[in-house]
Image 1 (cartoon, rainbow, N blue to C red):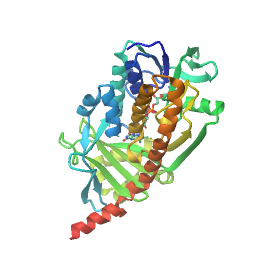
Image 2 (tube, protein in one colour; image 1 turned 120 degrees about the horizontal axis):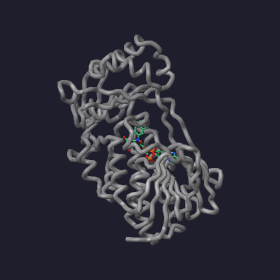
Image 3 (cartoon, rainbow, N blue to C red; image 1 turned 30 degrees about the vertical axis):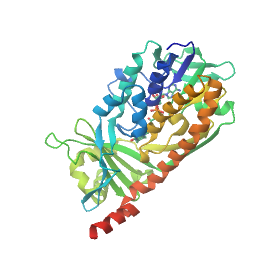
Length: 381
Ligand code: FAD
């Protein structure tokens, strides 16, 4: 399929690179500008969570670009949550029926896979180390700044901001149109730790998303292919800040996560909490997602959410499915596709942001939840 329209995507993260594959399939000339260097050339990539829970929504979108099988093959199924009680007892809470599960996937691998897939299209071009700095919404032009501060000006039929929770395109759109915007930082931050394999095997039951719910705090662990677990500690910044010394840290872990201490190792816990700054968590809602027929934001740029529902990336991938359906419905007429996209997507995106916020409380207090109490009652029958 060939067509003469040019699309510029801002951001080669998860949503930007998947979107690029999808749009290239339609024959658009796609150019992707990314602020960071190409992650495939980097030894360490700064950023958020190391692994992610991939669910149905995300898989459907990966299927569209022919990558579902590969991603699933490289992921680890998680069939249930495994709740770790304070006294060390563990009990599973399934996600659904026996054959239902979510996948733990490596963020970097997934992003690299998507970049490699995109690069196979002759009609996709990547420009790394260039960040969006200015837009002219009337003339349909955007300016990108390179590492030497030189400016590249792009003209396109459609600009799509897939540039994350702190989106530059969204910020620029807010100054150009009546775009409603709402953001909320929650009092909790997070730090990631690692549980190493024991005797070259997973140190805990593998096909689970492990949760240590402690009401005000919570820790979770997702399995990786290399038999480690990425373990994320969520708690209020004021609690992170109160842990000033190595003794404070270990005392806190022994009181709240006693069974995890030998798995993580005291040295690793101390070193990580002393040297790492907790990262913040933000929820973003806005409306509309477009200006006219040339400018659109998708993924976290339009709807960043707290990670407690494991749906940020999945919802961003689903955005690509919705855009694709509307491209079909309106025969690539952007003046119809973009407003229809905003209307269709806004309701669902707002709902998932709210559900994620709700699960922020549900997950860390799962021990007191109705589900848990019901399970306890049944155990006693
Ligand atoms: P990003 O991944 O943020 O990518 C944006 C890209 O745009 C980046 O590459 C950035 O460098 C680039 N960029 C930014 N500004 C510019 C600019 N001015 N010019 C050019 N490029 C720019 N989601 C799930 O579905 N499941 C999970 O289990 C899950 N767990 C999470 C755990 C944590 C701790 C966190 C914080 C998030 C989690 N998420 C999860 C959410 C998920 O990480 C995001 O929803 C997802 O990364 C959004 O993808 P994106 O492509 O929209 O944005």
